[in-house]
Length: 237
Length: 226
Image (cartoon, rainbow over all chains, first blue to last red; front, side, top):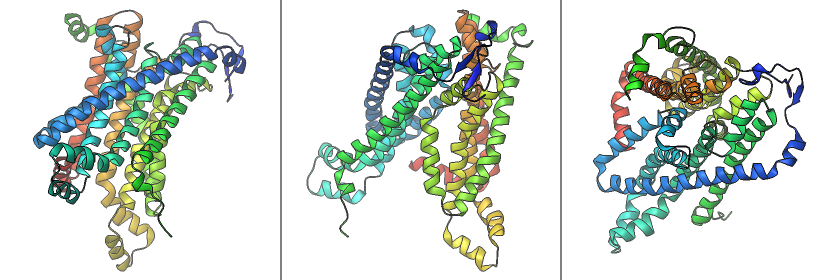
């Protein structure tokens, strides 16, 4: 049975009981619908990038607040943990009647989840900077702003990139969940496939979103190496 | 908001095969089975890899794969591959979701133990299996419990997805409410799912504190410094 299935097993298809064997993938369908797949790709990338950039911007501000007033770390991270406990389906479903089916719902929901991942990493990455380096920078007469930009930020970068990687992969997966609510991206393919009982659509949605997550993750690893080359210099043998 | 309150307080909405009580039961049942089955496989495997000092490498791999393949992908793929609808795809997806936190916490906990402690065990003449059972497992328990907490809260939150493949979890109120444009039902589903997820999170946190009283001080210090 693997690779083949009986039409009519899906939630909707149960009504139309058929005995036609439907292959797991119809390659000719893919060939005919490349523009459709491209459109979903563009939507998925857009939603991911927009919510990541917004998340990074807000998380930076909050990280600076935490850095300036240490006591805010507890409440802010507790809030983040609590928000992450909210199931993504519930958040999408709850926001749709309030904000409509436009870009607002996925942007708000995905930015929220990216914040939840990014804030702890931002704080941890600034904490990971060795104190002697900061002291040395202060001793050289750098202003606090110069210390942050030219010493702390470059040294915090590897940990920060780690957080951005996790946030990115998480968001790509959550965009797919949003597709169940017709919010765009590869999830729409899965949703259509489930409703129409068409395995090709489901498989394409699954494979493309996993592939996109892997490509994005590897790109961020490469970006991390480019931005902090001193960490990856070949050691003389 | 008044209609949401009415939805949650009308007794007919709680009874019957499509009532809140049955769906809550189904939701908890699939979560419980998947978590139990996953724990039976993942925790011993994690301890074994940790004991063999292969814990870190394998754990990183498992964590990365788990993150890249979301539950929805597993769920949809099982349906597409002919796994039917309802319980089975939901169970498989929840089983897979619980593997990374359980495996990673077990293997990390065992492989990061202080080598000196193991040396003392060997010095006392313990055999390999005694070392695992009497030293490694007890010392790894707090971290394994925190892995179990993460797995439990994630699975209970995500079992909602089963509704999209025809399984009668609490998510049904969301899918049916949306299809029928019944906002009271939709919000009722949202409130139920969120409440259950928060109860699971807080309940397990309390359980963890009760089971590992010696860890309280260290835990509060760790959260303060992170």
